[in-house]
Length: 136
Image (tube, rainbow, N blue to C red; front, side):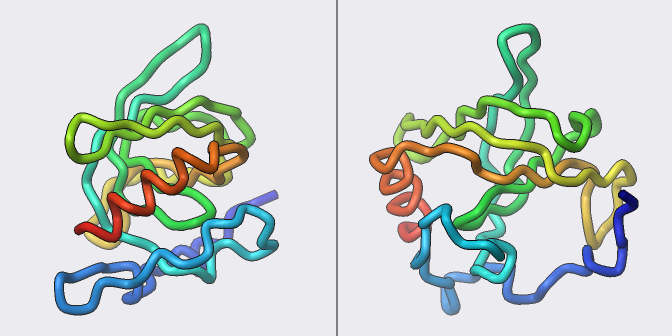
């Protein structure tokens, strides 16, 4: 399956500003089309990997269905990973995910990295992450 690059054009609604901050509303992971939800542009640390290998990256944007991790060494699409997403006040959130796509070229419109779909996130961690995003 090849990646349709035209679908990767950045949606202006992805950018959150103090005056027009999108609400975090539907954090349910059951939705078939998670990409239609609001996303937050944010820069926070994320550790990810599996038992054999751990890596560190930066969250570029995040939404109800997943995150984009900015990294020059993305995992292969289809790879499963465990993530620790660090939030304000020394807190963190655990989530399991699956790489859905990668971008290998660093550019202004889209940095190098990988799109990760949330597979599992504890409801308490989901609420903690939602609270962090709403406080931005």
